[in-house]
Amino acid sequence: MNYDIETSESPRLEVEYYGADFPVDTLVKRMEEEEFIIPGFQRKYVWKEEEASRFIETLLLGLPSPALFLAKDKFSKKYLVIDGQQRLKTLQYFFQKSFPNGKVFKLKGVVPQLEGLTYSTLPPSERRELDNAIIHCIIISENYDPRGMFYLFERLNTTGTPLKAQEIRNALYHGSFSELLQDLSRNETWRELYGKDDIRANEQEHILRFLALHFDLEKYSGDMTNFLNQFMLKNKDLDKISENEIKNIFFNTISFLKNCIGNKVFYENKLFNILFDSVMLLTAQELKKGLECSKFKKFYELLIKDKHFWSFAQPSTTSKKKLMTRLEYVRELYRNTQL
Image 1 (cartoon, rainbow, N blue to C red):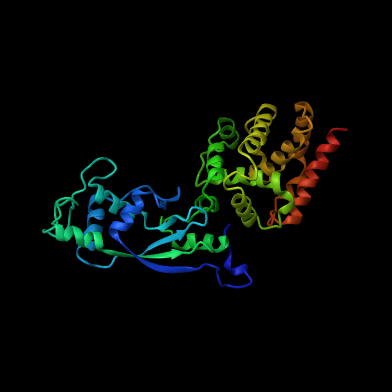
Image 2: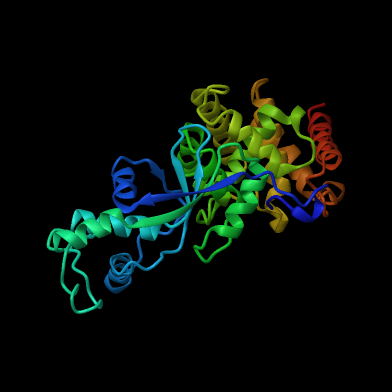
């Protein structure tokens, strides 16, 4: 799925990083000013009172805290939080004196001298100690190779579940395009065609794949992950392909398929990917010329019965040669049904 170090010419990853020490009050200030970007795949705040309290206690006792892993965002120059959001949010909530649910943040399950104290009721000397406590950060510089960052996110993020490629893209290339993909994935017609819940941004990747192949097929080299990365990166702020252009081609395509074929259009033989790519791309291309549902139905019925078409669903179906051959075969089959 992601960058494969075993197939790379060199095992070295092009990721520059450095260490930096920040006082706690500086980290809290940057949290309040939204200088940290917390990716959508990160868990919500899940620490219990005792866990949060013991982290604050660790700092008040002068004990070292695990480092935060951050990445300097290329575009906004803010910091992407790879690992450490629970600690950052705990600091913010303690300084704000309450948790998100409104409960007062009193230290609980800590040494007797600190039990029950809030930030404002800490003795002034202890409050200064906390403000000035140092937390070490490991920061990935903005001069990173996106492939290496994929690998880094997989290795360092401690959410407990391996990250999906699209979750990482949404973090690295956050912007108007990422927000649009999320918006498109909630469309009612698309939800009916996709037919299942969006688990870990999988369906956003399907939409991205369709758009990338529709608009940039000639640039596809055989590496689908990198192809999608580059397409999303260059259009992250929708300044290459407009929101209206994307919405028009996507909505017109799925509306035609739903009305003409029905909700199960992508689910023959349970091979979603091969049918999705082929039918979506052909429909989007032919819509410009004018599509007749009766003729398209004839083509579709032939397609799903065509054994040669299904033979393309073999390993390495994303190789450039196989993808181009399959798409051309589908176009030729469609042309023959129009005679």
